[in-house]
Image 1 (spheres, one colour):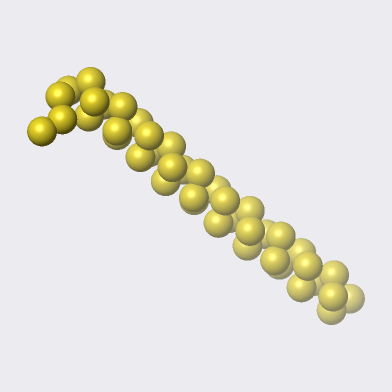
Image 2 (cartoon, helix red, strand yellow):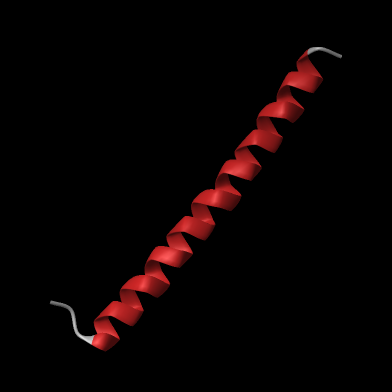
Length: 41
């Protein structure tokens, strides 16, 4: 089983990846919406 410091590093890495995925998804949706809006103008 992981020691305490390894688990802290894992949790920090996991939180960072989830945050990146969340904001990356939001950014992708905004870009897609902008492209669709530009095409339909």
